[in-house]
Length: 229
Ligand SMILES: Cc1ncc(CNC=O)c(N)n1
Image (cartoon, rainbow, N blue to C red; front, side, top):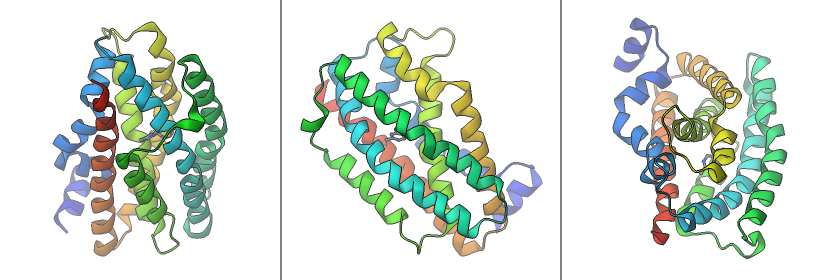
């Protein structure tokens, strides 16, 4: 397969090869107007609140999905290190959910009244499909990495030097933009690359299609906040 050869020749992973190939879509997910408006300080707070409330619901659905990836790693992985890395991600979700509750309180959002919007319903449906035992570990870990990496790249951009992110949003950006989360995403990427290197052409195709699907869902997820602009 051509891309496989490309990745091998350049000594870069399959995921990096795909990100280069699908750069426009990846930038669409990681440099969305909502993110750019946080970074330049022009963010409409109603948009931020919409995102926060919807993301709380998403993260609740992300918990069982993460657990399903953990189970697949335990069953299928040839390397025990995978389970530890994924377990770290699963374990941090409890704190994340508490943070969403505190943050919602701060902004006067009643989380029990939040109604999921269509883009959120669609994304959670994708997570549910990914939880199926029929979905291979390689495909699931590729999706897992992509979901985390989009948030990492997006929010890291908001705390880079020269950004004008409002003080009250800095904590949100630090949550996913911090270096520790960046390291964690790199560990996930390494796992995905290792699995993709050994995958069949059929599995590779499925993983690439899944990556594109995740990126499209991320763009639609950010787009939800536009209803308030
Ligand atoms: C829509 C979306 N994508 C990725 C993440 C990051 N993962 C867990 O927090 C998230 N919170 N929300």
